Image (tube, rainbow, N blue to C red; front, side, top):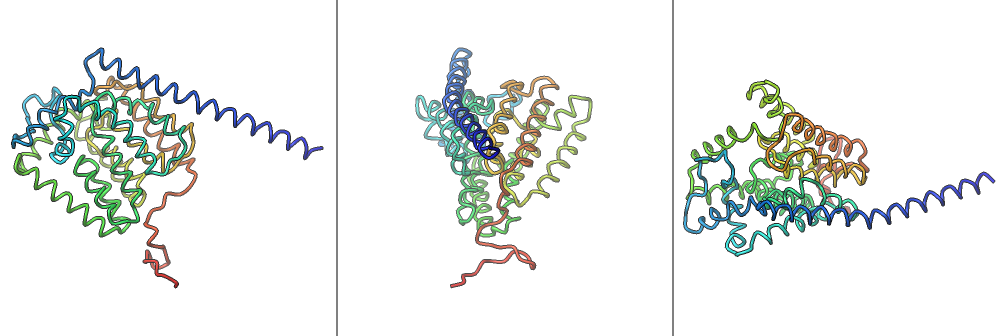
Amino acid sequence: MATRHTDRLTSASSGVGAHLRAVQLVALPIVTLALLVTTVLVAIETHNVAVDFRSVSPEIRGLVHGINPYVIEGVGNGGHFLWSVLAGWILLPLAWMPYGYVLVMAGELVGLIAAALLLGVRDWRLITVALAWPATLNSLQSANITVLLLVLVAAAWHDKDRVRCGLWVGLAVAVKLFAWPVLIWLAATRRWRALLIAMGVQVFSLLITLPYYSLGEFVRYEREVDRLMSGDAITVAALIRDHGGSPMLGRAVALAIGLTILWKGRRQLGWVVVATLVLSPIVWLHYFDLLLVPLALWSPSLLVWTIPMLLFVVPGMLNGAPWQTAAALGVFALTVVAAWVGRAKEEPAVSSAFRTSAAGIEPVTSRA
């Protein structure tokens, strides 16, 4: 009797689970589609469609004519070219198209789906939730290059056992310099040939920048952008500054936290991406699309994947009030902790071409 009762409960539980999953598969796409459509309609009404890409399209087109895209005057007011020259050249064909920004917006969604698949996500409920994240909606509305960075990092993970992994990492860092911690991941996991390729991409990126700007001028430009914009970013440093701390104190605390995370998790890409977000002097809402990496590698839980939805408390532009910055950082931390604590499996730290032995990491030799 007890066995029969247990079987009946198990069957009932399985039936409820199946019905719940069916509801999720229907309801989640509907909600996500509604949010995406609403985002586009609001952007059209407020004249903010693809605002980032459309603002810098003239500078991107000017690259062909040798025009310096970096204009320091009024840079704190927004609308300036803040991407790398390499990123500009990659997007050049779209900048010349009359409605190229529409393709960029579509690329935000396609890119996020591609990144999830490259990271091994096969549960479409999780991908659907990620498409509804406030960070994704912000990427769609602004048409920036954060999702491009995400795809490159995901491709590096997908090809982690191949030398071309270094190409993807190199392009990621060249497109967005704040992704430099991913280079540390290559070194920490002894992917030396991939690291060499990644560094070669950095040299190439520097060489194509020099005709427009000297290295010294570029550094000064980046420092000025940092000075003018970092106080309005979603960072630990900005939060400390909002509560009366000095900018130096804020930077020191963020640096200490970020470097600690990077050192402790240097062999796991999920933690390296977390450290990247902590160490970046400027973080906007769409940067949190990068949370897809640790979530994909650590957690299959739909509940955990919904935590970034709480980032709706953050405005689409800047960081809002101090409580909004604190709330966003809290959501960030909660997402990371929940994903790590409830992880289904350990993230492989080294290539499958290597094994750990008592003497350290050794190449795996054939037994044939």
